[in-house]
Length: 202
Image (tube, rainbow, N blue to C red; front, side):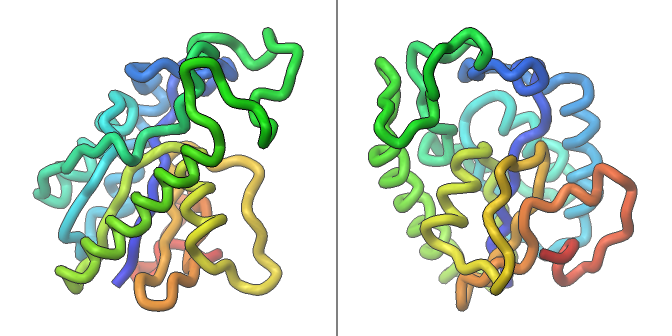
């Protein structure tokens, strides 16, 4: 079966291009996105849902847990990269590149520290997969989605990492060979019918 990596639904800060605070809630649009995501995953054979303990990810995971009849396990390992003192500031207010590889936010995480944490997440997912024949869902954040795929999974030939991870996007990874089956897919938001085995194509 598969590892299913999900980004949280839209927040007001997302829409305004602002570095998000830990408890930034879903917007009304984000709440609807979470419902549509839950409908997409309702028939999947899932044994476990793990989730970042920020509010926006918990609110995204809640409808999924409801339709699948599962509890949600929270872990701070799945949190977004900590941008420290930049949180709450609009991107447009900065006169430097806050995503530069050599930039370390004050009271935040460097890329190296963040990527190390993503490595812990990946190992925990693989360990959890050893105990089940069902899918495992991880509800997390955009940079964590990217770090997991960029550093630990394999993309098919000719497929590249997206510049942006969509709200409630679904990325599915074969847990045996770590091949990406579905990448950053938000077809459920457009009302598209989806294949049960892949949930949409790469």
